[in-house]
Image (cartoon, rainbow, N blue to C red; front, top):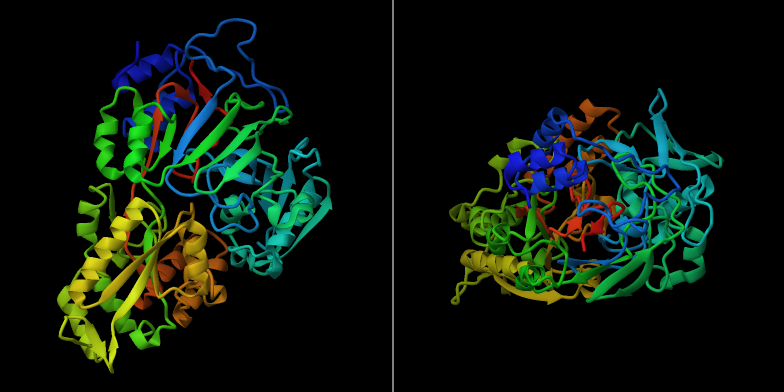
Length: 573
């Protein structure tokens, strides 16, 4: 019989009928915060706790006897619905990293559900006393899918490649404070820093710093990440079909995990995973309701209440670190996008509260600054900027010399204020673009929405779109927003082509912070520099919503990683 409510959940955990991981998953679905869950677990004493197998050994399987309903089973293909198209599966050179990265690749370190840094490929790490180096000690026994040992030389190859301007790494700028990488022995990696860079741990944990076999990557060239992948995660790459799906299968020779919060330290339970692109938003909820998929990211917000009432589903609502931004191309000087008053006018013409209410169904919040209130460095002072004020917006464009023509569209020196707004072809992006289009029409701007597939979208941004909407998705928001505003990242991903000295100074302060206090102060400086100068225009932030059918166990999206890991996931038959 299924347990209902927190009381039933506690009883099930205490009796040993569900695991700690399952308790956390269900408690999140009930709306409890991570601190509340931690406090509840601390007060509970379960009847039994499973002892995981040591690294390199599989956890016990059900082959010898029929397991109970809550004991892990081996087998089955997890079908996961995803709200975006899929990018090339190459950490060094991809536009975006997708959920499969967390199945086929590993990083030096990762985050646990409480936000702590924990081991993945590195069992320990430490900064030098002067803050000018950080040393990682690699675990023993790690290897790539191809069988090559994953040692310090292999990690150094990855980091050296990222720093090579010819590699095409879209986030190479985040490694600018790194002078170089040394591998003094097979298990030791040392990052030599140009200056103290406290933030470097948040960089190397991300998808773009997952460890790939550079030898295999060089061998395959442009086909790497499309035809073949060589990582060290518990699953092997099978197929990538843009616009359709990505599939992987269990790696039978996986040497095991040392990540402390994974219950299953051995090879995966699942036979495989298939991520399915569901770009039509209304179909996401329908497919998980009809059992066509097992797990889902990002149902339409209007469907969330219905999904929450479905007894076969668990809905996990997390506060999102990421947000939607509007890029305005500073090179369109004929439209005055290089003028602060024009960018302020556009920002004041956008009614963020109305967008949150009508499009997000209150599953989100206005974004007045470059990062969301979910982040620990969020500065409430940004909220005095970018408030909806259409009268003020009209005053700013008038001061720049723009006046309404006979059709209401602003003109100046014979130039109509008309431009294209480029978006990725996805249902919510279309809705958001339509809302922005209508609100800017009230200001006197003629905006043409151009919806493109993912590849064409990024190509258009890199070549110089008039304007674009982008949803940044990153676990450390200031790090990624830097990419959109730093003069070092022109033409991409600084798609606005913005060169603002005050912003560059704030970036430098963030990237030279030597400790937590300096980082917090630099974070405030950065946010205020953005709202005062608007190299990007913040729009809205949405909640991060995940759904799974109740036969899925061990699947735990949490606040600190973009995607869930799949080591512990199993399917109840």
